[in-house]
Image (cartoon, rainbow, N blue to C red; front, side):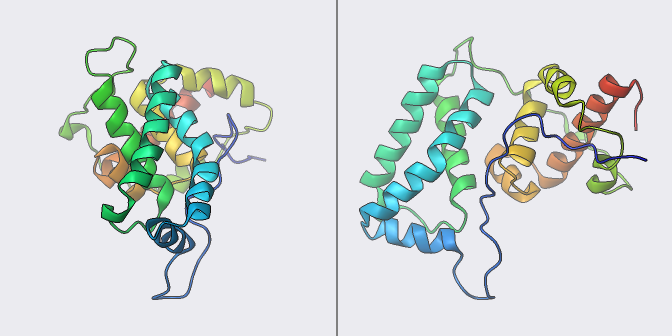
Length: 208
């Protein structure tokens, strides 16, 4: 009997999308953001407390310089408060913050050898797939292989590690990941499927 091949190689984060809401109604994140923009300190604190741990974790997926990550995250929250009245509407706060952090780290780390370069993939690497992602994830046993899986993930390239982190830790959808990384959503899906195939090949000695 086959079990799900799940990427539970670390602590999952709460989804940035907090459940469904009635059509036309503002999402919980949008309501929180509106309160924050109006100068509500409690809303600001709620955003800070809720998202700062995941921002640190995501930042450390992009660079191995913890001081750079810490300074960048703190700077982001200071800028958010100072510029709150001029910021646009945000319906999903976590993807927004991830995008800001990614851009800030990239800008501050240009020329820094400690930045994990996220190589640009050629467009011709994008291949159509007849299998939905769920069919690729399904299969193989994983419950007793979490340690081996963590080691296998470390062998992926930085781009693949980042995408898996956003997908299975931050639990973002492909459109949100595409917005954060600047990739097309189809490329996001393709690279995630490719990374999963590589992991399964390393762990089970076969390709799917």
